Length: 224
Image (cartoon, rainbow, N blue to C red; front, top):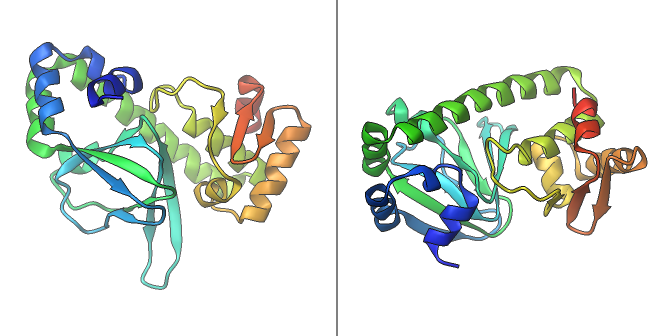
């Protein structure tokens, strides 16, 4: 599949651009493949590009010198992130790690700024995305402090299916229990138990390497 077709079908922002804007984006974007476990961006490095996940799954996290790590969010195929660091002209405050083999797209800072200067639809998309991210992080702070593992797993699944952040419409998530554990900040064993509880409630169906959401409204209520 061509990059043009991929961006048309898997992003909300590319289709709203004009012909000249699309042409420049396609010319300037850089694609890089990473193996599972690879460091994609490192905390403290100057942000020079807007990041998109063409395929795969990445984890955005922060850590301490002692080795403690806190996952901030997972970004599946179709998701774009890192605009905050570009807008503030600052160093990244987080690490980005590939949870599985992933292809990362980088839109150079100059191209990102050029779109901001000329495209109202692109600016509107970023405004909605930033607002949704704020809500996501507030919810995650609440989740860490107040919710049980089942609710945390429910929220993790809902975040990966958020239509304002990722354009994938399928109710089936290609994700392993280990990856869910990383993103929900619980052990793989506890993630397995939580998924079985959600499955017993007929909210999800657990498959090998995937979770099929059966009741999105029920899952949303469970994660509150």
